[in-house]
Amino acid sequence: MTSAASTPKGERRRAALVTAAAELLVEGGFDAVRHRAVADRAGLPLASTTYYFDSLDDLVYAAMEHYGRSELARGRAQLERLSTEQRGVDTLVELVLDQLLGEDPAYDAVLLRYERLVATGRRPHLRPLMRTLAGELRELLTEIFARSGVEIGPWRLEQLIALVDGAVVNALIEVDPDPRAAAARMLRAALS
Image (tube, rainbow, N blue to C red; front, side):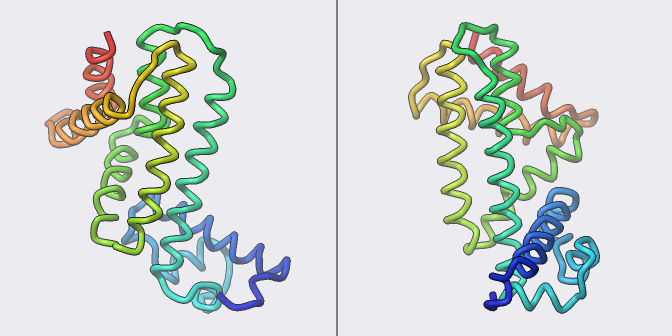
């Protein structure tokens, strides 16, 4: 990134590119994030993507970080609205699934989310970021359980995340899939 990005105009342009790339990433996965598509979405010249980012990998990294941080911020805001009380298993299940699967229960939204997660394995430059974001997500989930009156250790949390992931992946290949409902059933049974 050049020093021009440190000016207010440059910061706005860079932020517009990151936001556009994050939107494309959510809508179409990694293949949707291309220089031209990002510039078009941001309403900026094509050259701006290479002016503000050294490579497409750098732009994808910034988009993943932006998206991940915004998801965590949304989850933290949801957590702040929670009082510390016992809540029913169904409410807790929905809170946890909002963090793990996102709030959009549509098949395509869940599928794209898991495609992004799996595809990061082929992008070594994203692994440190994903580990950091995953750690912060686990902290958020632990706090959601605690505020719901359920103390949970790291090992049990990993089990529950794996249970949700397995249920989602299995549901994604069904004839009439509903991955969120499948994950909810499994998680509800594990917490009851």
